[in-house]
Length: 461
Image 1: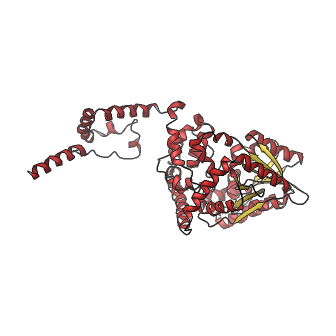
Image 2: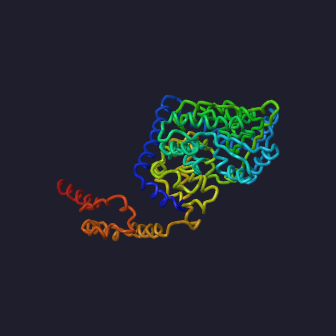
Image 3: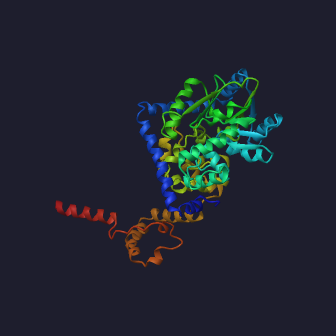
């Protein structure tokens, strides 16, 4: 994959039909979000409350996480703390290894993606099976998610049909969605029944009760945890909410923002281990606490991973998830990448038109577009600013600070209209690669204004 967003996006756009389909499909999800949000009169009030609750929770992590640990342990769970991705992976492996687990099922978890859990376990002889349908498709294709809620949104059903022919022996040429779903269900059933341990992520962790809350539309998390005696849950520490009343605010916002549903089909609470079994909970930092020292970017921790910012982003919709170099794409991914490693992921900052649509739809009011703008101001300090753009900005500054030069340029501008095409459209003209240059008016606004002003004075005489 390309190391630069712009280059990878150009590659994505070469398949114009796929790019158009990707754009239209995600815009449809955004439209569903808008429609259902209008059925909730207190929608904006809920967003305000969610933002306030997140800011409170993230500034009281020390209290709320300790309260969660106390209540979870009182419920019979075993709580672990992981400072980084490596420690998180080792804790999971140690738990599985101690129980001699070889067959392991898990539901969708972006934290596991972030920390590279699957390859870590598979390298050590554990068969890891993703049970979310989209994640399972990607696992069989050896691909990463391109969206945090709709991980396989970029995969067409024809491709899934061909994959299932190879992996599950389905009918050749049959890519009916219902048929493929039944085939996947049948294939996964044996995995569920033979699993020795199961794992979930967490959409929310409730401090006052020690509950882990998992939201799915397929019920795969419930299926996975119903048979094995050994269950594990893991969450990034920012997923903590104070109490059940707070949880109610977030569950009203999550599915509506993500997919335009009133609520996910399954909203499951996990509190105690199964009879005769063990329930392990891992609380992961992995750079989250360090973010608390960046007041301008602290709202990034408000994110509830609904994906609404991706569905509305004109750049993400037209460039695809794989054009981003951080594992989470879209506006939230741009910001998270910069928080974790600004020098490494600075190329993603160009994947933003600063339309601020992402900030407008975020249910927890993360100021995504505004933060991207602030990160762009840091590019020069990081040594990542474009030399070409710096040169252009310097030229514009010179022009704007010298009125005589500016006016002379305005008078000369219409001459560009008469230049031969090869002089206007070349390698240096990025604008002209995909669109026509506008024609310069024969008369500038300045000249028109002055002329009209003189004309009106004469008319008054």
